[in-house]
Amino acid sequence: MTPARWSALQARLGLVPGRRSLHRHLMWWLFIPQLVLWIAAAFVTYSVAARYANLAIDRSLYQSSRALAQQVKPIDNGLMIDFPKAAQAILETDPDDRVYYMVSTPPGQFILGNNTLPPPPPIPDVQLDRPYFYDGLVDEVPVRVAALYLAYGDQASPQRMLVQLAKSRASREELARQILIDTALPLSALILLMSLIVWGGIRTGLAPLARLQAVVEDRAPNDLAPIELEAAPQEVRALARAVNSLLAQVHENVSTQRRFISNAAHQLRTPLAGLKSQVELALSEAQDPALKARLQRVQESATRAAHLVGQLLILARAEPESAAALGRRHFDLGRLVREVTAEQVPRALQLGVDLGVDDSEDAALEILGNGLLIREVLVNLIDNAVRYAGRGASVTVRSRRVDTQAEVVVEDDGPGLPAEAGPDAHERVFERFVRASHDSQGCGLGLAIVREIVERHAGQVHLEPVQPHGLRAVVRLPLATS
Image 1 (tube, rainbow, N blue to C red):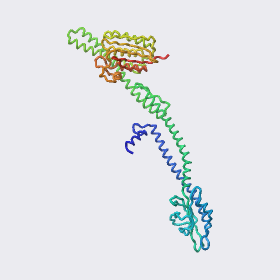
Image 2 (cartoon, helix red, strand yellow; image 1 turned 60 degrees about the vertical axis):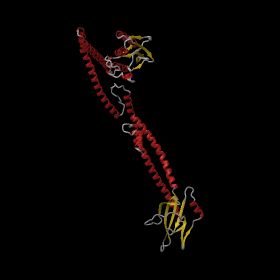
Image 3 (cartoon, helix red, strand yellow; image 1 turned 90 degrees about the vertical axis):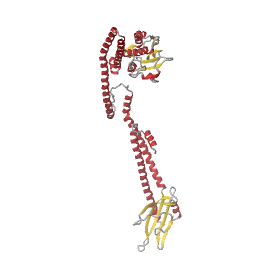
Image 4 (tube, rainbow, N blue to C red; image 1 turned 180 degrees about the vertical axis):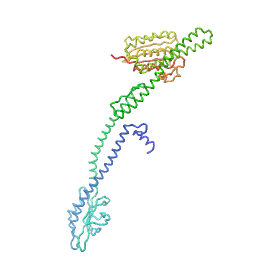
């Protein structure tokens, strides 16, 4: 077998390191020994069956050779053979097997029967009236031969006579084969039943691992809660405890980082606010154009830094622990959409953007969530649309019911995402600190915050292009059940 074929066979059997299945590995280690033992048992059974078949045939040959020897009687001047044709026909015509016989005296000198019978092997000390059994060939047919040495004559001149009786081994092999079949079939059924029981036991034993896999796979990336598998076997509980210990360490590290970011953002808000106030005061008093330009850049940098700090604080509140601490309640999403849009109108007018709400659907959109976080979602989406749509563009905010979900759409007819952002830009912009535009206004956290909050509320958010130009942000949140 070539190395390539061996590798392919290993891959199919799950024996390749790194891709080995524990279930398949256990099955092979249990089934292969069973197969080897079954083959060994069949071989031993056939050998034992052949041995006992030989014993039965040897006993039959011995009795027949004794009966044949009794038909040869010594007389004064030789031997008298009392062997009628009828008895000869009975001996030679076996309905199931072929029988051969031969009488010779002295041994080797043919007298009666079939002179093609093979002679017995050399015997150092021949014992009279004792059968000797051996295998041979008659006309290319394998036979089992019984040889019986007998003495005749007076004590002064004793002589020996050899009586041989042979029978083909077909009956012996048929008997051994039948014993093997009668033994192998129940043994095979027993092994098959045992294999099914073992297979069921392996599946039952490995079921906790499958449940552990399902528990881990179904978790959100930010879910670091301990795994509970108390009903599982000791080995799986040990694995779960090891995973829980690792999750606890990761949770502690992540919590430490989150607390650091939140604390740092809180600490930065006050000096940044003071910096902005001082810059604005300096701008109002400065007379030198060059100094005013530098102060203007400082003010823009301070504004971006304050915006970044605010976004970091919002992102910290959107984390699972902080979101859970803030609590949830029922509220009308449509009403919140109208309130947030109205708050953003002055900024839209300042940037020359036509911002409006399409409230043609009057039905309430009641959802269960955190109103402060959902407000941040709407503020970020509308702020992005107003900021990047461009002067003279229109931004429309719509809310409606879609099956069992509430849908909010923020659509603009601006330029949309730039072509150089790439074909996957509509997905990449939801990553942290990723900006599709290279202007100096954004910090790359707005849409990441949107996705974080929406996913915390079991919703979905995505961007899609608008023809002939523009961008549409779609948020879907589950409606509250009564």
